[in-house]
Amino acid sequence: MGQEWPDFPQPPDVVSELAAALFPAVLRRADQRRRAEQYVRGLLAADGRKSVRRIAASVGGGADEQGLHHFIAHSTWDWSSMREALAGHLQDVMPPQAWVVQPMAIPKTGEHSVGVDRRFVSRLGKLDIGQHAYGVWFARAEMSAPVNWRLHLPGPWVRDEERRRRAEIPDGAVEETLEECASAAVLQSMLKWSIPRVPVVLGAGSANVGATVQRFRAAGLPLLVRVPGAMGLTVADPSLPGFGAGRLSAQRIVDSVRALRRPVAWSDPGGGAGTVRSSQVVAVRVVLPEGGPSLLRAGSADGRPQGLLLGEWNGSRHAPSEFWLTTEDRTPVPELLRLAKLTRRVAEDCATSGGRVGLRDFTGRSFRGWHRHITLASIACAATTLTEAGHEPGTAGQWAGHPDVLDARGA
Image 1 (tube, rainbow, N blue to C red):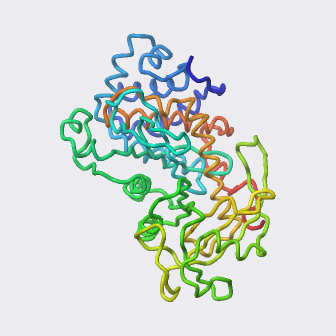
Image 2 (cartoon, helix red, strand yellow):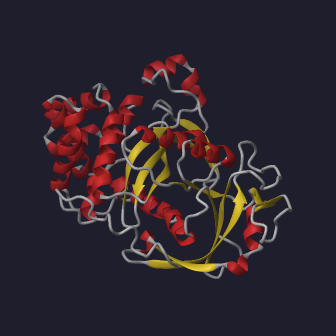
Image 3 (cartoon, helix red, strand yellow):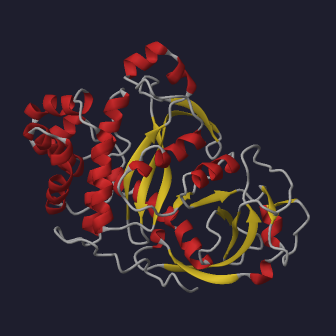
């Protein structure tokens, strides 16, 4: 038996609103718009794994299977434009507090689907076979929805011309690290879209934080990234311990000022509606890292860009539980922590509503087919999110006056 997902109310009115807002500008023909809406409704209605056959059976019977398969696998519509339209619509109805970059592992049994690779997964203690993608989610404390995706292509998929041809990988696709893929999910498309910029939250961490920080600073985009406690940083505040001592570990830096911790309340989506928790948090001004090894060079703070290092303690733990580095050194610490906690909101929604609409369920093998499927699955995910949040079709800015369920100005 397949995994069972929680029941969600079907959102026909919201789907109609999304179809009217997104499809006409991208899909020129009426039959394409009909197929797109069929596919989205099928993702919401079909039981189990969202194969084209099950989607077709749930919305029109077997006669629609061939048409839907062609629409995903062989049609020529532009998924990037569709995602931009989705982002613009969500900006109107649920303006995000942050863009959260969420990794998504997609298990596979074979090795023919585009991007499939063998990776060692430390938490499992073994090699795992599958695809790896990064989604960019519009996130608020109350809800989140994906608007953009990037599929990681390991070296063999990029360098092997026969593999590229069979998987329909575009000529412009190049080999990149996981960190480069995560950054590019934002920087190579979303900055071209006509949507307001908000902070980017990278919760998966990075092996080369310096290079990631530099990419986002060059783009003028605020960044909040989780870092390991062993990472080396330089204290920039002359009034705090460690100033002038060169490179110190993030854990040592925040431990030295633990007496300055303050409580910050934040919403926990994993605890049920209305669950509020509290953490002890401290922030230290540090020199932002440069590209290069993750254990960074010692150096003076003079003339170098600065940011904040956040340390968080949960409950009665003696050691800090998490460390975050941000380029935004003037943002209030409570607001920064709540932005960091949006990673929990996104992880919860990716597992529940994302699982329900089949974000991981594409059964084809091509690069283009994967992107078309996950684009329409993102629209289905948005429909579920808006319905669960009580969105009324035809209204906009419903949450614009509520930046958080808690007051972001205080602790």
